[in-house]
Image (cartoon, rainbow, N blue to C red; front, side, top):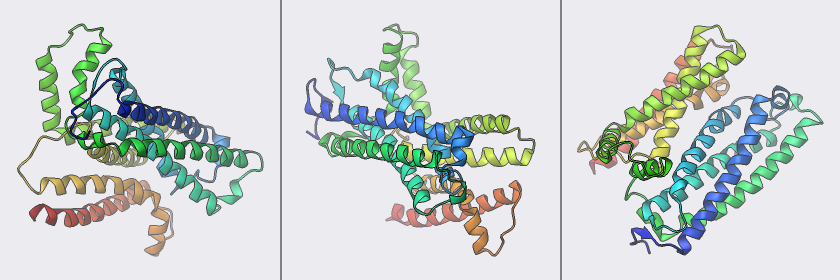
Length: 332
């Protein structure tokens, strides 16, 4: 079955994958409701054990990434028709996307449980709100665990071997046809040219998307909290953009949104890995800033500039180590 390039109508593979997709939607929808309630409702947020760093940094990203992934998955599922065959790579990539979305929910839930286990900010817990939040977290965890079991089954199907036979860009033309009712608004050659350009410049495309997302999230927060310090705004944009870029690079590697154009330079893979790790190190360093400053013997509160320099240092160290670990393998 792993050699099949097309999954036929009525195939058992489709049933297993459909269950995985639906489980992802259910877990994702529950998570979005839970995350937005516990981060946007001030009284609820204040009583949650996970409202402060390092726990809060996880949901700060997943509350945006999970719905974005679900939206992309929902768009692609418009091509998931019971009366039509499906390319094997589309089936495999959708299964991975479902697992990735639910995995992000599980990661956030695990972080929240750690906060509960260590009694984080215990003085802020309330007798009325905190138990309700922990109960809701229990329900979300159970739903997420059930979804992961279904998605594990889908990922173990032989069709998963076909995940790199194409990418999401291959579905733009048929998806446009569905959305426009079959009307040819753009020439097929234009779709192919745009896809080829995107594959050649995949890192730049993901970087632009990350900057746009980081700026939008920061602008919303700055307006809502009435920030006036330019350095604070720049710092927030850098942290958000870095986090989104790292997650986009990692997500693209796993989910194959954009299949990178082949490059002869053997060191290129190491550069991609280092850039991804360095970007993810920025928000991670900020989240762990208290512990890092403590290890350095400095317990004072630092300005946005000081935090930016700390995050930059963390990114440089993590990126350099990653490059050093990955590069030798590319020369073997």
